[in-house]
Length: 147
Image (cartoon, rainbow, N blue to C red; front, side, top):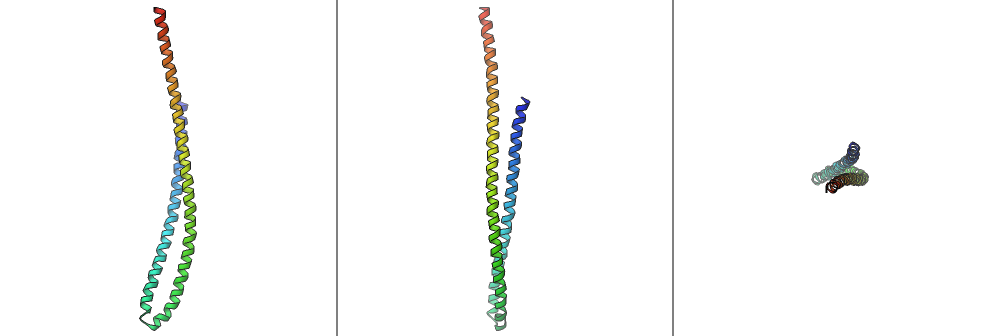
């Protein structure tokens, strides 16, 4: 009976291990998503700064001349950010695939654990039924012997 409990415990440990791996994958994906959001926020701020500078530049010829260089730098930064965002989004997609694979592993481990538990339960029920049958046979024999 002790070994049966150990088997179930081993399956539970496997499930816990797979759940831990899933949590790690989710954390990794979350960190990547945070980075994507941070870069998108940077890009949004650049766009706001560019619009603000446009407003300021429209009021003065000197400012308008400086605005051209400023706008070029902002556009270059925005393009660099867009490339970085695209790269990190690819990493996020890959991380999501790993999350999906880890989830599938958890489900497989849970199914194996549940099947093992059900098998042990059925084994125990069969053993109990055999004991009950043996008791019933002994009672029947005693009653037949005494009759």
